[in-house]
Amino acid sequence: MFQGEKVVENKTCKQCNSSFEITDKDLEFYEKISPIFANPGVEKETPGLKINHDWKKYLIPSPTLCPDCRQQRRQAFKNIYHLYKNEETGLISAISPDKWLNVISQKEWWEESDLWLTFWRRYDFNKSFFEQFHELQCVAPRWNLIQVWCENCERSINIANSKNCYLVKSGWDSEDCLYGERVFNSKNIVDWYRVKFSDNCYEVYYADNCFNVHFSKDTKNSRDSLYLSDCENVSNCIWCVWLRNKEYHILNKKVSKEQFLKYKSYILSSKKNRDNFLELFYELKKTIPVKCIIIDESENCYWNEIFNSKNVFYWFSVRDLEDAKYVYDWANSKDVMDVNGDDNGILGYENCSVFTPYNSAFCFNVATVSDSYYCETSVNLKNCFWCVGLHDKSYCILNKQYSKEDYERLVPDIIEQMIKVWEWWEFFPASLSPYWYNESEAQEYFHLKKDEALKQNFNWSTYEAPFPKVEKTINANKLPEQIEKIPDDILNRAIKCEVTNRPFKIIKQELEFYRKHNLPIPRRHPDQRHADIMAMRNPRKIFDRKCDKCEKDIKTTYDPDRSEIVYCEECYNKEIY
Image (cartoon, rainbow, N blue to C red; front, side):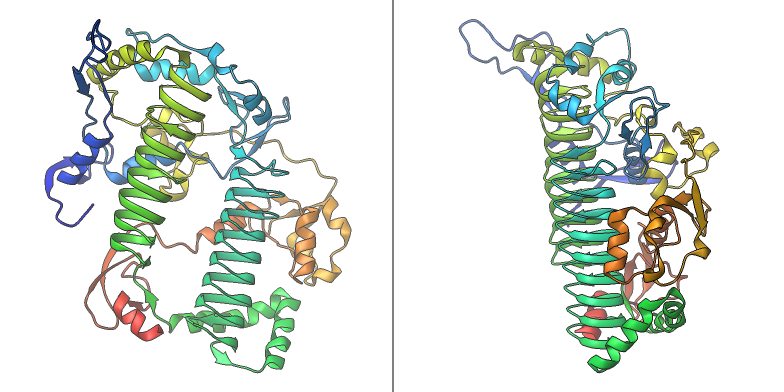
C-alpha cells in the first residue's frame, strides 16, 4: 500500500489458485478495522464499577481470495445495468420478478419505519450464520430501486438528488440526463460514461466541465466541439486529438470560423457525412502518443485513473482518497480496503455500494452506516450486525431490536461461533447476492459463460422479460438520416436495433434533445450503445512495456501488443505542454 511495505505472507487464492501477497501494512489495517467487544461471558457492567476493562478485539485475518477474486465477488452483489417491471405489482426494480425477495416500493419502505422489525430472527447457534441470513433476506422488505431525493427518475438506479433522469445508472445532483452511467452535477446529457459538471453533451466518455460537446473521449473544460480525444480547454474544434487551449481547429489544424461552421453543418447533416471523415480522425489518433497511466495531482499512488489522492495502491477510477488499497469507483475516503462503489467513508473493508460508511465491513447497498458488519439494503444504521432492509436503527441483530447491553453481550458470542465454522471475516458467499451473475457488474469486468459461473458457485439468471407490446415497428436502417425528417409519430413506434434486432423506443424528452442539437435518431438499442461506450475502456489491468520515446520501463493499461504510441508521464508532459 505504502512505500516501505514488507511482504509477510504469500498465499494461494482458494478460488483461482493464483498467488498473492499480504504485507505488514495489510495486517495493520485488518487489526485497525477489527471490532472490539467485552469477552464472552464477562459482564461489561459490574456492581460498583462503571466499566469492566476485560475487552477483546475480534481480529479480521488476511483474506483467502486474491484481490481480483475478492473484487469479482463484491461486484456480483451490484446491479446498476438491468431493470425489470413486475407485471403484478407494477414496480420497476433492479430485482427480477422471479427472485425469492420481498420487493416493495421506496415510498412504502421509507414510510413504514418499523415494518422490518416484524421480520426479525433470533440467532440460532445450531445453524450457520449465512444460512440464517439467507432466511432473513427472503422475507425482509427491500426497496425496488436505490434512489434518494429524486423527482421523475422512476427508471434510474443508484441515483440521488436528481430530476427528470431516464435509465441513468449512478448519478448525483443531475437533471434531464438519459441513458448513461455515472453522472455528477450535470444537465442535459445523453449516452455517456463518467461525466461531471457538464451540460448539453452527447456520446461522451470521461467529460469534465464540458458544454455542448459530442462524440468525444477524455475531454475537460471544453465547449461547442465534436469528436475530441484527450483535449483540454478547447472550443469549436472537430476531430482533434491532444489539443490544449485551442479554438477553431479541424483534424488538429487551424481553420477560420467560417470554415468551421461550414464543416460542422455538413457533419451533423447525416451519419454518412460523419463516417466519411472518421477514418481520417482514426488515422490522426494513431500518430498521437497516449499517456501510460492517468494519475493526476496525487502522491505515492499506483495503478490508473487516480485523482487528487495520496497513498493509494491498486486503484481504478478514484479521487480524493488517502491510505487505501484495492479500491474501485470510490471517492472522498480515508483508510479503506477492498471496496467498490460510492464514497465518503472512513475505515471500511470489503464493502460494495456503500455511502458514508464509518468503521464498517462486509456490507452492500447501505448508506450512512457506522460500527456495523454484514448488513445490506439499509440506511442510517449504527451498531448493527447481520441486518437486512432497516433504516434509522441501532443495536439490531438479524433485524431484532436489543438493548445496548444485550447487544454487546450477544455479538461476541455470535462472532465466536462464526470463527469456529470459518464464516467470520469473509464477505457474503455469491449465492446470497440478490442479483444473479449475468445481471451484475461482475459480468462487465469478469466475463463468464453460464457453466463457468455455476462452477464458481455464482447464480445465473434465465429470466426473460416479456416482449414489449408495440403496434408499429421500424427497422433502424429505414430511419431518415436528417433529424428534421423524423416525424413526431416516432414516439409511437419501436425501432429494431441495427445490431441486435432488439426493439427500443424514443421518448419525448430524448427526441427534443436530438432536434435541439441537430443529431440523428440512434439506430442501436440503449444496451448496445452502452456496450459501445464501454468498449472504449482500457482493461483494469496493468502491463509492463517500454516508453516509446525514452524506452524506459513503464506500467500501463495498454497491452504491449496494442498499436498505440505509449509514453511515460515525463515524456508525455514534455510533448504536450
